[in-house]
Length: 51
Image (cartoon, rainbow, N blue to C red):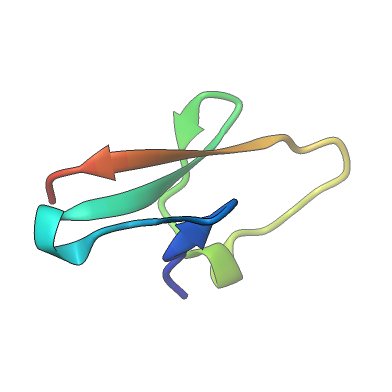
């Protein structure tokens, strides 16, 4: 599953934008629907540009 919009801000495919998922500052290498979640985990979403 690819995240396409966060809080009303959509990633623009034409500009090669994508939402990066991090946990504790480290990049998560799984899709949003495949990322395991444990108690007290904190995730961040950052809009990135360039594939």
